[in-house]
Image 1 (cartoon, one colour):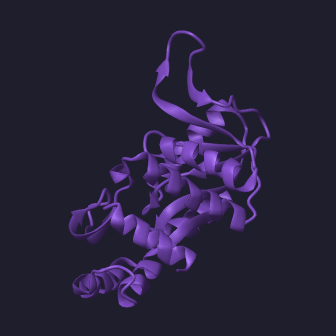
Image 2 (cartoon, rainbow, N blue to C red):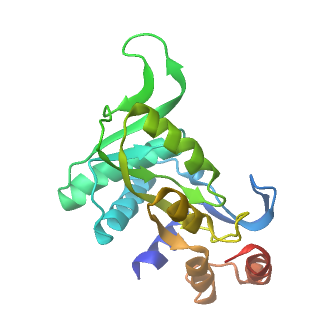
Amino acid sequence: MAYKQAFIKFMHECKVLKFGEFTLKSGRLAPYFINTGEYCTGAQIKKLGEFYADCIYQNNLKADTLFGPAYKGIPLAVAAASALYDKYSIDLNYCFDRKEAKDHGEGGIIVGKKLTDGEKVIIIEDVITAGTAIRQTLPVLKAAADVNVTGMIISVDRMEKTASGKSAAVDVYEEFGFTVYPIVTILDIINAIEEEIIPGKEYLPKIKEYRAQYGV
Protein backbone atom coordinates (compact mmCIF):
# COMPACT_ATOMS: atom_id res chain seq x y z
CA MET A 1 0.00 0.00 0.00
CA ALA A 2 1.31 3.45 -0.96
CA TYR A 3 2.53 5.79 1.78
CA LYS A 4 -0.36 8.27 1.49
CA GLN A 5 -2.96 5.51 1.31
CA ALA A 6 -1.47 3.85 4.39
CA PHE A 7 -1.73 7.11 6.33
CA ILE A 8 -5.36 7.69 5.31
CA LYS A 9 -6.25 4.14 6.32
CA PHE A 10 -4.44 4.69 9.63
CA MET A 11 -6.40 7.90 10.31
CA HIS A 12 -9.69 6.19 9.55
CA GLU A 13 -8.89 3.16 11.74
CA CYS A 14 -7.97 5.49 14.61
CA LYS A 15 -11.28 7.37 14.16
CA VAL A 16 -9.34 10.56 13.50
CA LEU A 17 -10.82 10.94 10.01
CA LYS A 18 -14.60 11.14 10.32
CA PHE A 19 -17.49 11.77 7.96
CA GLY A 20 -20.80 13.47 8.74
CA GLU A 21 -21.58 17.12 9.56
CA PHE A 22 -19.06 19.19 11.49
CA THR A 23 -18.89 22.92 12.22
CA LEU A 24 -15.32 24.13 11.76
CA LYS A 25 -13.60 26.97 13.59
CA SER A 26 -14.18 29.03 10.43
CA GLY A 27 -17.94 28.49 10.81
CA ARG A 28 -18.16 26.34 7.68
CA LEU A 29 -20.30 23.20 7.86
CA ALA A 30 -18.01 20.44 6.59
CA PRO A 31 -18.83 16.83 5.61
CA TYR A 32 -15.57 15.52 7.06
CA PHE A 33 -13.36 16.27 10.03
CA ILE A 34 -9.82 15.42 11.13
CA ASN A 35 -9.31 15.36 14.88
CA THR A 36 -5.82 14.33 15.97
CA GLY A 37 -7.06 14.52 19.55
CA GLU A 38 -8.51 11.05 18.97
CA TYR A 39 -5.07 9.42 18.99
CA CYS A 40 -4.83 7.89 22.44
CA THR A 41 -2.52 4.85 22.55
CA GLY A 42 1.20 4.33 22.54
CA ALA A 43 1.03 2.32 19.31
CA GLN A 44 -0.94 5.08 17.57
CA ILE A 45 1.33 7.95 18.55
CA LYS A 46 4.42 5.90 17.64
CA LYS A 47 3.03 5.22 14.17
CA LEU A 48 1.90 8.81 13.74
CA GLY A 49 5.37 10.05 14.59
CA GLU A 50 6.79 7.77 11.91
CA PHE A 51 4.53 9.33 9.25
CA TYR A 52 5.70 12.82 10.26
CA ALA A 53 9.33 11.66 10.26
CA ASP A 54 8.88 10.15 6.79
CA CYS A 55 7.47 13.45 5.50
CA ILE A 56 10.44 15.40 6.90
CA TYR A 57 12.95 12.89 5.55
CA GLN A 58 11.39 12.50 2.11
CA ASN A 59 11.22 16.26 1.61
CA ASN A 60 14.85 16.59 2.76
CA LEU A 61 13.96 19.30 5.27
CA LYS A 62 16.81 20.65 7.36
CA ALA A 63 16.30 21.75 10.94
CA ASP A 64 17.83 21.89 14.39
CA THR A 65 14.55 21.75 16.30
CA LEU A 66 10.95 20.61 15.95
CA PHE A 67 8.39 22.94 17.52
CA GLY A 68 4.93 21.73 18.56
CA PRO A 69 2.39 24.48 19.29
CA ALA A 70 0.21 23.84 22.34
CA TYR A 71 -1.74 21.76 22.66
CA LYS A 72 -2.11 19.25 19.84
CA GLY A 73 1.31 19.99 18.40
CA ILE A 74 3.07 18.92 21.60
CA PRO A 75 2.75 15.11 21.28
CA LEU A 76 3.17 15.39 17.50
CA ALA A 77 6.56 17.10 17.82
CA VAL A 78 7.76 14.66 20.49
CA ALA A 79 6.64 11.64 18.46
CA ALA A 80 8.20 12.99 15.26
CA ALA A 81 11.52 13.71 16.97
CA SER A 82 11.60 10.22 18.44
CA ALA A 83 10.73 8.59 15.10
CA LEU A 84 13.35 10.61 13.20
CA TYR A 85 16.02 9.24 15.51
CA ASP A 86 14.64 5.70 15.52
CA LYS A 87 14.12 5.38 11.74
CA TYR A 88 16.76 7.68 10.27
CA SER A 89 19.31 8.27 13.06
CA ILE A 90 18.53 12.00 12.88
CA ASP A 91 18.67 13.48 16.37
CA LEU A 92 16.84 16.81 16.48
CA ASN A 93 15.84 18.96 19.42
CA TYR A 94 12.20 19.55 20.23
CA CYS A 95 10.28 22.17 22.17
CA PHE A 96 6.76 23.45 22.67
CA ASP A 97 4.96 26.37 24.27
CA ARG A 98 2.77 26.81 27.30
CA LYS A 99 -0.50 28.68 27.03
CA GLU A 100 0.42 30.70 30.12
CA ALA A 101 3.90 31.91 31.05
CA LYS A 102 5.50 30.21 34.03
CA ASP A 103 6.24 32.75 36.77
CA HIS A 104 8.64 30.60 38.83
CA GLY A 105 11.70 28.45 38.24
CA GLU A 106 13.19 29.16 34.83
CA GLY A 107 10.06 31.07 33.77
CA GLY A 108 8.98 31.68 30.19
CA ILE A 109 6.59 29.82 27.91
CA ILE A 110 8.95 27.58 25.89
CA VAL A 111 9.51 24.06 27.22
CA GLY A 112 12.33 21.89 25.92
CA LYS A 113 15.12 23.26 23.71
CA LYS A 114 15.88 26.90 24.45
CA LEU A 115 15.71 28.61 21.08
CA THR A 116 18.55 30.77 19.78
CA ASP A 117 18.89 33.30 16.97
CA GLY A 118 19.34 31.68 13.57
CA GLU A 119 18.17 28.25 14.74
CA LYS A 120 16.41 26.24 12.03
CA VAL A 121 12.93 25.21 13.18
CA ILE A 122 10.22 22.99 11.67
CA ILE A 123 6.71 23.58 13.01
CA ILE A 124 4.71 20.39 13.62
CA GLU A 125 0.91 20.80 13.45
CA ASP A 126 -2.18 18.72 12.75
CA VAL A 127 -4.35 20.42 10.09
CA ILE A 128 -4.37 23.72 8.22
CA THR A 129 -7.62 25.36 7.14
CA ALA A 130 -7.44 29.15 7.35
CA GLY A 131 -3.90 29.63 8.67
CA THR A 132 -5.12 31.19 11.93
CA ALA A 133 -2.98 28.95 14.13
CA ILE A 134 0.29 29.75 12.36
CA ARG A 135 -0.32 33.48 12.80
CA GLN A 136 -0.59 32.82 16.53
CA THR A 137 2.44 30.52 16.60
CA LEU A 138 5.02 32.65 14.81
CA PRO A 139 4.93 35.55 17.31
CA VAL A 140 5.55 33.02 20.10
CA LEU A 141 8.62 31.67 18.28
CA LYS A 142 9.96 35.10 17.36
CA ALA A 143 9.52 36.32 20.93
CA ALA A 144 11.81 33.50 22.06
CA ALA A 145 14.50 34.03 19.41
CA ASP A 146 15.01 35.13 15.81
CA VAL A 147 14.59 31.59 14.50
CA ASN A 148 14.59 30.48 10.87
CA VAL A 149 11.43 28.47 10.13
CA THR A 150 12.36 26.02 7.36
CA GLY A 151 8.94 24.42 6.97
CA MET A 152 5.73 23.26 8.55
CA ILE A 153 4.48 19.66 8.59
CA ILE A 154 0.77 18.90 8.91
CA SER A 155 -1.33 15.74 8.75
CA VAL A 156 -3.87 17.02 6.23
CA ASP A 157 -4.21 20.04 3.96
CA ARG A 158 -7.93 20.70 3.55
CA MET A 159 -7.05 22.90 0.52
CA GLU A 160 -9.72 25.49 1.32
CA LYS A 161 -10.02 29.09 0.22
CA THR A 162 -9.12 31.82 2.67
CA ALA A 163 -10.11 35.47 2.46
CA SER A 164 -7.41 35.92 -0.18
CA GLY A 165 -9.07 33.37 -2.45
CA LYS A 166 -5.98 31.16 -2.14
CA SER A 167 -5.29 28.21 0.13
CA ALA A 168 -3.92 28.69 3.63
CA ALA A 169 -0.71 26.92 2.57
CA VAL A 170 -0.18 29.45 -0.24
CA ASP A 171 -1.00 32.33 2.11
CA VAL A 172 1.59 31.09 4.60
CA TYR A 173 4.26 30.82 1.94
CA GLU A 174 3.54 34.28 0.50
CA GLU A 175 3.30 35.94 3.92
CA PHE A 176 6.05 34.16 5.85
CA GLY A 177 8.28 32.56 3.21
CA PHE A 178 8.19 28.90 4.20
CA THR A 179 6.41 25.88 2.74
CA VAL A 180 3.66 23.82 4.36
CA TYR A 181 4.19 20.09 3.75
CA PRO A 182 1.08 17.93 4.24
CA ILE A 183 1.34 14.18 4.68
CA VAL A 184 -1.88 14.02 2.63
CA THR A 185 -4.45 16.42 1.14
CA ILE A 186 -8.22 16.22 0.82
CA LEU A 187 -7.71 15.12 -2.79
CA ASP A 188 -5.72 12.12 -1.53
CA ILE A 189 -8.59 11.28 0.82
CA ILE A 190 -11.14 11.52 -2.00
CA ASN A 191 -8.98 9.21 -4.13
CA ALA A 192 -8.69 6.73 -1.24
CA ILE A 193 -12.48 6.61 -0.90
CA GLU A 194 -12.95 6.15 -4.65
CA GLU A 195 -10.37 3.33 -4.68
CA GLU A 196 -12.06 1.76 -1.63
CA ILE A 197 -8.97 2.04 0.55
CA ILE A 198 -11.40 3.31 3.19
CA PRO A 199 -15.23 3.28 3.29
CA GLY A 200 -17.24 6.45 2.75
CA LYS A 201 -18.52 6.52 -0.83
CA GLU A 202 -21.90 7.71 0.43
CA TYR A 203 -20.20 10.94 1.59
CA LEU A 204 -18.39 11.67 -1.68
CA PRO A 205 -21.14 13.84 -3.21
CA LYS A 206 -21.19 16.15 -0.18
CA ILE A 207 -17.39 16.22 0.02
CA LYS A 208 -17.13 17.18 -3.65
CA GLU A 209 -19.91 19.76 -3.26
CA TYR A 210 -18.02 21.26 -0.31
CA ARG A 211 -14.81 21.27 -2.38
CA ALA A 212 -16.60 23.04 -5.23
CA GLN A 213 -17.75 25.79 -2.85
CA TYR A 214 -14.70 26.23 -0.64
CA GLY A 215 -11.80 24.38 -2.26
CA VAL A 216 -8.85 25.54 -4.33
